[in-house]
Image (cartoon, rainbow, N blue to C red; front, side, top):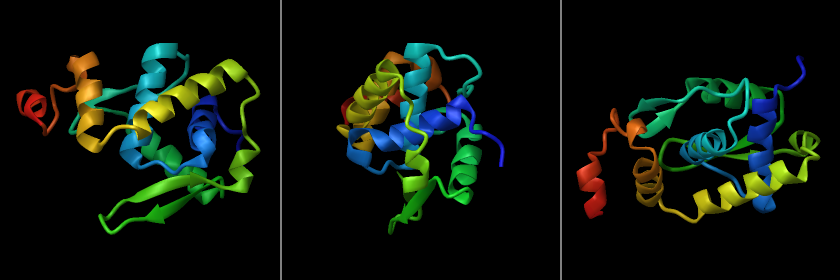
Length: 144
């Protein structure tokens, strides 16, 4: 098994922060996007406008890899997708940099405080260029 990349460690640390509350794939995607926009890390996920705003398909690949390596687990929902949570093995990758952890915790709390629609509205209003391929019309979202 290869050593984890920084961006994979960021996924794990998002799942560790805020009392290890599980996150949906959309929440993880938007959390990583907001982190990338605010912190500008190098060698990170590249986001493109997609059906629900900013998306990097590499995130899905990394989630599968982290799950197969035993660092995260899934909690299926009746909606056909799963929440992701960190395992005790994944917790070993806690980043020691308190500034990074504080930033991840802030972003995660923001993400988890919003409903699906509120989260899209939040991201689309701040980064409208990532809403151009959305299946949600931005004018309709404003009315919701």
